[in-house]
Length: 317
Image 1 (cartoon, rainbow, N blue to C red):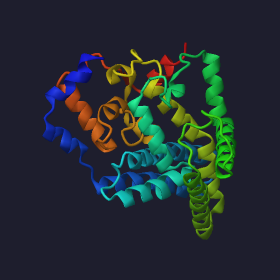
Image 2 (cartoon, one colour):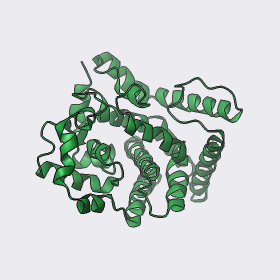
Image 3 (tube, one colour):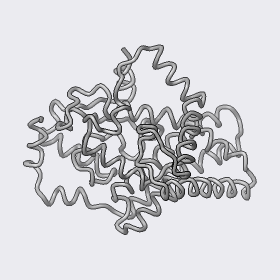
Image 4 (tube, one colour):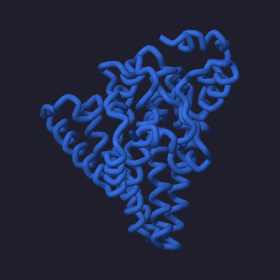
């Protein structure tokens, strides 16, 4: 175990940690409003100026903001989205998770396992970090599969098939889906996904632009999968010391530029080391936590990379 792992708390007071952990309902709404606001803005742009450039731009923005919604769901899973637990879980599912075919409740069980067993043999996310570096050809194929919708199609079919089996109480092979599978929650997820997407489509229909729904679904199938791949690689792949007891060596923080935060790294998602140190610090306070750690010399030798482009190059042999 790294000495920094055991020492960082010695340079923080209990009051400082408590303040960092304190979350704000307003900030929770702000994250959600930002995501849907950007989605609505680029859809409006396409509605008024429909051409290849605006459509591609919209797909890029919406894909990144779907990751933003996944991060909102992640906050709800850690119960740091809203102070009221019922509101936290309702918003986390109905306004963040269900629209992108996820479930905050099932994700919570799986994700907390990841935090407790990072890089351990039973870490449910370990498969996402293994197998790197890859060849240029292999990475090119991965990116093309994402952008051509093949990854999205595979996930859509695979997830739907598993949901069908779970609902029918049939046996599901271990490892088919990195979630704690539960029949009642799976039924709610399927219903929630259908209902939220039907409402979304219906709203666009009422506004006179039903075809804009293709931007939402298209981004989920393509650009959304690529930004999720980038985030997954950045967080734990090719880290210096994949030791379950050393978050400073088994988890990477990626420092991002403004355009990365706008398109591919919303809501401070790059500060992943800081999140692993204290999982109950909300996303919008992780940058402050990072600065405090840096000022107190706790990040010397930690796994930190500047920008997703450098992370991407590192993943290619």
